[in-house]
Length: 405
Picture 1: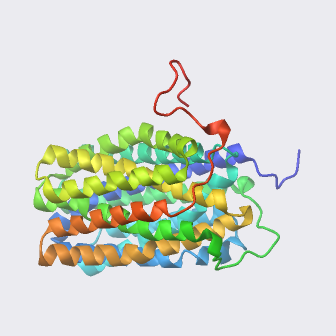
Picture 2: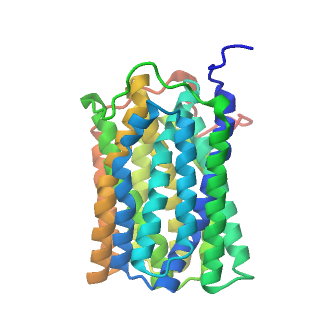
């Protein structure tokens, strides 16, 4: 046999994909039921919801600690331990009845999730070939969407046979066990871990030449967390939709995302990161204004779906870093970017919840539209990396019979 430490990219991607699927299946269950759970079981108000979401983002500030751990443990071990922690938080989530208890469960879940993300992104980019990084990121986004759809189906079906607190407890305990299985999968695949780097990896890596990546991560948190925190809560709290309606909405949205997000990945390769990110923030501005001013449920459902699909544009920010960063800087810069991502992720939900509580939800979503519009302006100020000729595709008018992959 060859070198025992040889990095088999295809096998690593397969095992990573299995664990990513299980983690996102667990998160799909949790997120689908979450807004109805906090509204129906806890009776949360918009200001409390914003506070809980802000606390949820605090662990994201400490993702740079990952870099010290990665210099000792492999990325597979980090993923495995964090997935098990995530599962423990989900099991606890199923037992909470008050806001303080909810905060504790959410913090545990958040620590696991936010530590997984930079490791997953770094492993995917490291295993992908040059010119295919956007496509690989898109494929993982599609797999995550497929897992999420499976979670929404479970939420919908179980609502037919269970109800009340027992229904939510069963959902969250199931989700917790799935996340723990994902962690065990990564812990047991020891043969597919990359060895720790021989050189010392800095815990805190900040390079001025990567400032465009840092700024994009900082701003993207505002738009994303505005959507994650308040879009479905608006439908549940203001328009009174049932958990099964939420499951159908999220299932349809993420089912289509299985196909749409890989397409976005190909757009990143074909259009370049600057144009792709600009398009994403333009759509985000329009959907935020729809939430604010269009009190028609079918149109709000469409806005939710589009907003959800456009969250896949975040992969363009990771690819942008890959275009400008040294290979050895990729993992530590992604981790620091994740930390910066959460600075506004802490502020915006809290401020948005207070604005909703004091004034109305319209002003919360107007704030989201202004943030997205400002992001469009910022993106134009960054230099655009050239698109490799090998992946420059005729996206707007493909040739008849051209391969879609």
